[in-house]
Length: 133
Image (tube, rainbow, N blue to C red; front, side):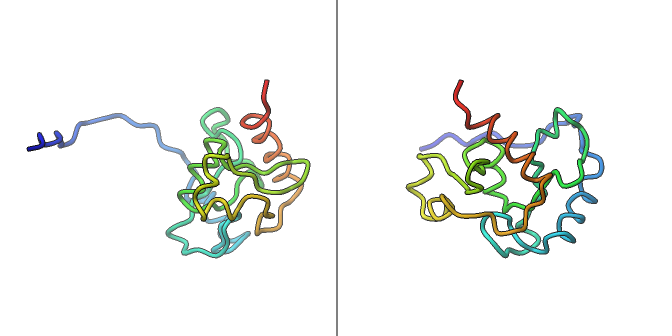
C-alpha cells in the first residue's frame, strides 16, 4: 500500500508581474486568438510569452512577446523550441521529435506576422539557448 503524499498549504511571499494582463491583452489585439507556432487556439489556452527574460528585464517591451499555447510557452522558455534567425523556421530539440505535436512544428514558419523587433528578440533567444559555446 502506498503512503499518502503530504498535502496542504503554506504561506509564501511571491513577486508578481505588474502589467502582465495588459501585455497579454495587447498581444491578443495584435494577433487574435492564435498561438504564434501552432495556430488558432482558445484565449484561455494562450499565454503572453516574453521573447526575453522578463525576470532579468522587469519590463514589457513593445513587440517583445508573442502568444503561445501553455505547453509551447514552457518549452520555448527552456529553449527546446526556438526560431532559427538564419532561416526563420521553428526548430525543436531532438528529444521532442518523438512527439507528433512538436515534430510537426520542426521546420515550419511561425503562423503570425513577425515584426523586425520580434526577429531581434527571437535571434537573442536563439543565441541564449541554441548556440553552442
